Image 1 (cartoon, rainbow, N blue to C red):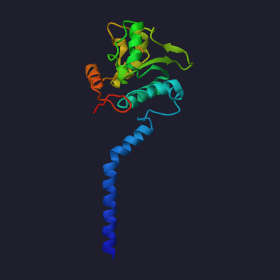
Image 2 (image 1 turned 120 degrees about the vertical axis):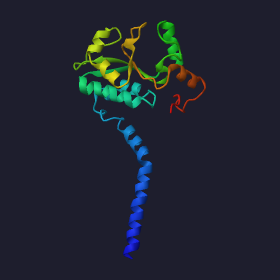
Image 3 (image 1 turned 90 degrees about the vertical axis):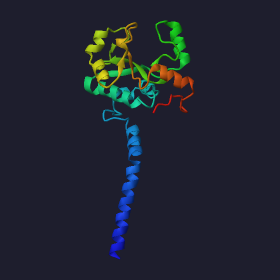
Image 4 (image 1 turned 30 degrees about the vertical axis):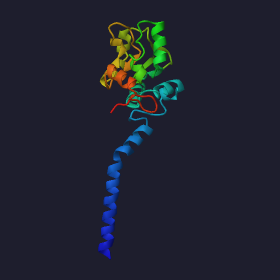
Length: 198
């Protein structure tokens, strides 16, 4: 009787271990998503309580949205600055309108915004004063520490563009822009309209 009971306990523990091992990644993924993705995320942060910013950030591609959440959370926690998002995902139609208004803007399909891989921001200081915006010099952006932090996290910065002053623009390219466009035009998109990336 004792042998059968021990065997059942051992088999039960083994089965539970196997199930937990199989479900380990989905559980981690769900937990990561529900917590905003990273240890830096905290729902009490000012950027998260700003509905407009939160909503814009949530439009970003699922592949990188958590990385942007970590970035803007770290800016607030480590640098004492608050990020205000001004643009995230942008439709091709909206991009075409921006191009028409300013020929220096990217054409429809040629912007990382069109795929949810870019975020435009302004920055507020502790007193709520807008200290960094599009018209702000490259040097002031760099002196803030934000650019260095972004680059250390693998982001690229529009302030480095040679033909256009765009310091509000931060982006990641998991694949080239040409590949993004090809995937989109080929219809390789999910049910929310994002291009599918492995």
